[in-house]
Amino acid sequence: MSTALTCIVILALGCVITGVSILLVRRLVPASLRGSEERREPVFAFAGVLYALVIGFVLAYALDGYQTAETASGTEADSVSSLSRAATLFDAESRDRIGHELICYSRAVIEDEWPAMSRGNRSELATAATDRLFQSFGKLGRNSADNSALSSSLERVSDLQKARATRLLKSDTYLPTMFWVFMVGGGFMLIVFATVLKGREPIRGQVMFVLPVTLLLICSIYLVYVFEQPFHGPNEIGPRAMERALVSVTEFIPDPRADRPCP
Image (cartoon, rainbow, N blue to C red; front, side):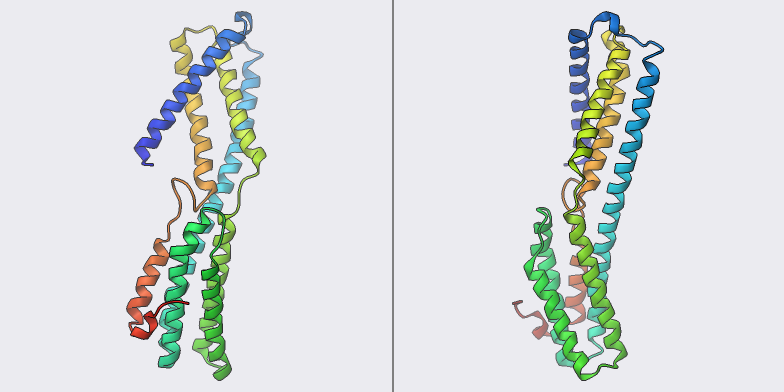
């Protein structure tokens, strides 16, 4: 969904919720209980501040998780690119074998694991490709354990594995249900409370006061929804970094044997 369409939907939803709130208050709340009295405004202010604190905390948590997932995806792709460079330091057979495993891993992540992450799953193909990559470097270690290029490559493989684990963890991490209940239920309570405070105003005056409150609450909840799931939704992280890494590997290790079909 484009940004312009999202804004239109939020505006329309805000108008509908505002209209429903005004209608409910006018029908269910007696006129004597409506209005902005001194004893009601502090309660509304306290509830608003408490709600804002919780929303701010939840949004900061969701944004931090989103940034962590984005960083992990970049680190994983950088590790693939670096390993393709390091592969050229070994003999031709090892270089082609490592290049092949890197290509298989990148393809598995892009074509299989990324779609699976939107459902909270992982790819067995990517896991198998990681295991084969470890095995390839393990064979080199048995022949030249003191090789500095091998040690550096093993560190990169470890970084790749850690970055993938972080990415998968963030793809399957959700906010507790009670947070959503609080945000949605508490938001609607604030909207109704604001409508009651302006209950003696003409409808135009009520709309001018309640609609901005409604829109701010909807936007806050929408931002939490956007950043809560990094690999699902309107602002999902795509496999662009890994796609660039795959292009880099295929260009840097052009031997035809490195492009044979993956297991």
